[in-house]
Image (cartoon, rainbow, N blue to C red; front, side, top):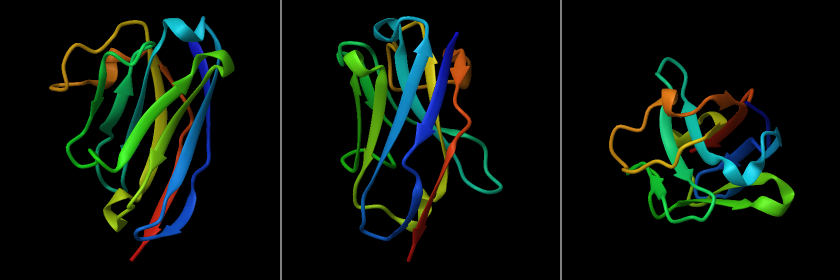
Length: 127
């Protein structure tokens, strides 16, 4: 497994931007497929974005496509989620996740596809 620590959450007005970071340790970082999920109050945790080591398998939830970008710096063992044009409905706790296998399709991405999780970081977007 991998130890993951998120940072970069905070409070921002609608239309603003935030960049989340996810620092990894343990298993060789380049072997991991990384992902971001989020959980809004009273809702189930949902998939946001995923990227394998090379970027050849990169997928986004429809709700964030063209606004969010997942990236990674393998040399720094860190993954990022750049969030632009934020909306109040983006308010949630954001979780970083890591898994051993590349995601083959944007459909039906499950929490069970990933074996390591961070503690989460709060993102609040005001209207």
